[in-house]
Image (tube, rainbow, N blue to C red; front, side, top):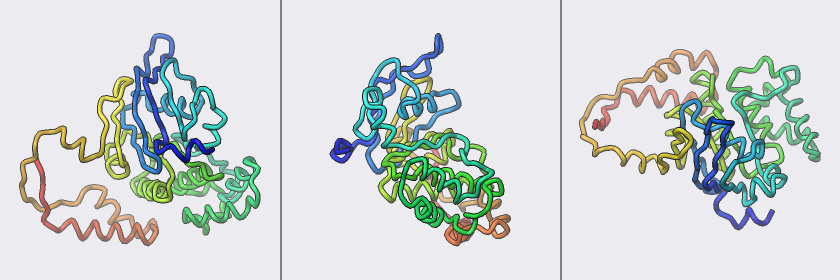
Length: 282
């Protein structure tokens, strides 16, 4: 796959359109995703996010326009695209009868990889699931199940991963677990296209954000660039108050036995809540 190594753009979308009979879902979508970055596609339900992901992952054909993934055209080289990607849908696709380790071994065998057991053990450690590896997936929490799902999608080391609404239906702690996993992926060089309807999720994770509305990209850029679209801020000084999420995590964090990194983060948040900070109003 030498094409991908020379192309700094992991995903390129130009003029993509898709309709279902009289329903025009995508009306000419354009954007680029830099290789090794996190790109958030933000939009409300029905905006066309999942349809676009299905086109980029070769599950649907576009009516018009072009798209390349990892340097390969989704229409003319679908096999190369599929070998370059992994897709994690809105619901965790794990076999609940099997243990976490057995799920990973199964996928490694389906991909005809050598040493599936070693691959499974490595991913369990990477996603902090080693202790739960021999338990049935049905006993996992929502966050653990989603982490296992993402781990399964990384078998074979795809350079590009699509995460379609990865935290839909998860509680606040599970969302933080998934966020940490996504950051780890990007830190290791994986290109991540993330679709979400949660504004804070895009704000927390994305290097660049595109807003999809009624089938078109109405604005895109970094978080700082998007904030500049609003009028200049008026500076005031107020004391930061804890959010409901801060309160929730402070109350249940210990009982849920989060990772040490999460516990430290939660403690930092509680400490910061008493510090006067600058508030920008518009």
